[in-house]
Image (cartoon, rainbow, N blue to C red; front, side, top):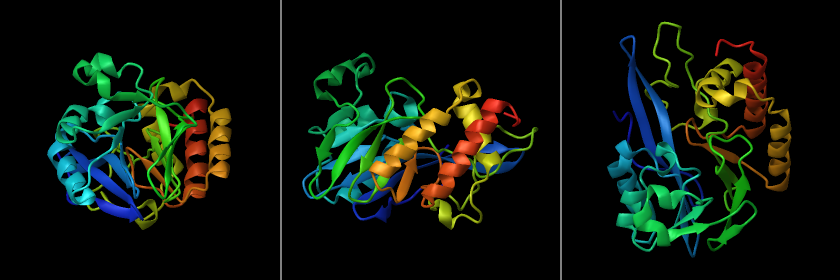
Length: 270
């Protein structure tokens, strides 16, 4: 069921935060969790990062139409072929017949054979000139699937991290629903606009469930890759698919690393 919905939020010049939240009932309490997509618009072209959940297809199409204001959608970049990230491809490709699907699309023809001619493979390090800004494909240092990629927009200094840097806002008690959640009223806030910054416990809770492999892998080396990427590409905002947009990049980097270490060392309840 859809949670809080509405218009896309313009979070930086040329960057719109789309999608919505899904809701669940936890011991009589309504809880929400993000399924986000992001539209980046340059003077020549536009790109949609992730597609949102299929439950939100009408919402996403409406948000896109308003944000594009009559312009075409040129590129769609699903960060990996999983339902919250690529599930709306058929609807989007039907609405925007000239749009191309870009990224590590090595197996997308198996999921969507009718659109095989619209898949264009792009590797980490490659760029698309959107006009006045460049969109760069970046290695996914924390990933769900093998062909996950991240992205970076030079215009806003924003890093799009798919399932990386996700966190919840309320760690449920053991008897409560175990979905990653946040409370109503928090669906379109930057991390710095939340009542309190995310804690290590909140990040560890979500990490250990969404990325089960992190219980068995020390990701310290991966975080050095993230640090190197942030040094190479000045980043003011981080856009996860499942969580508030992060405007305290340094603080969240420390929190996320500590959360991964806690999950790996088995000191959390995940």
